Figure 1: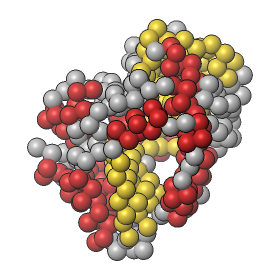
Figure 2: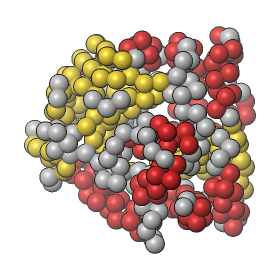
Figure 3: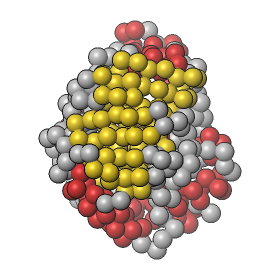
Amino acid sequence: MFNPLIKKYADVLVNYSTKVSKGDLVIIYARGYEAQPLIKEIYKACLLNEANPIVRTSMDELAETFIKFANDEQLSYIDEMSKLEVEKADVMIFIGAPNNVKNMANADPKKLAKRSKATHPILSRRLERSANNQMRWVIADYPTNALAQEASMSLEEYSEFLINSCYLDLDNPVKKWEEIDKEQKRIAEILNKTSKIRFVGERTDVTFSTAGRKWLPCSGNMNFPDGEIFTSPVEDSANGTIYFDFPQNYHGSCAKEVFIELKDGKVVEAKAEFGNEFLQSMLNTDQGAKFVGEIAIGTNERIQNVTGNILFDEKIGGSIHVAFGASYPEAGGKNQSGLHWDMIKNMKNSGKIYADDKLIYENGKFII
């Protein structure tokens, strides 16, 4: 049932999300082989826009092999081609189509942390160029059996879920995303007039300063599907506790029932009932990993349950997420790290958000 919509999917990614235009150098990164139909349509759409597309493919198995066999010198090495691409590309389109989402589940967390630290300059430069309007990028997925299994769905069910989450079932999905963008900009404008945000919920009471920072709406430009409003809080401002009731997935591994205490911006206590060793290793990736790089509110009402895929899970309508590690320059963030781990919390059960001590959100809904 997905095949008839592939062209529409590609058109949205090329013409709406990244606005590919004449002369653009477009690098299309494909993880896995199953996305070939979508990659072909994206490539074709870029050519029709008189751009210059290049396709880069990778296999899940290579990442597993690399972490398993690479020595410290190899873990720290960044090839010159990757550096050149992040400097020269006008557009980057990332398509995920994994055939195994657990291939890194047993990888050495210390080696993962070392690799994340090494690749940080590439991520940082991409975010910097994006913030300066020098490059556009988008991350999207193609439905595979691996993603469907992780979400406890059949492939057909997962394909339908992806289609609905992206509003690709509508005759004009771009119009819908433009409507979402308008509403999220309205809320962002209100939040940008405030300087303190407070999350309250189960085992949770945490505050952040957002003074001088910018709240940004997300409506299909860098992630697809999308649906969140985010900012990067003042680096030393986070104080309080937060309990993440959803499973927290990262690089194929998982931590469950995560409890975090923050003081003056930094994690001073962290524990998970499951995956605690992995949690500790990731939070010790580098000096910036224990600081908050992002706080966000999920707004996609077509996504309601955790699927194990952060591209979808962080957008769950009625949720918040807090990312530990790298912040976003476009929001005013200054924290740097090789880590950016979005941890998600359900806010539908008595969750509240206050802005400058005014209640603005309750039980998963804005009330402003």
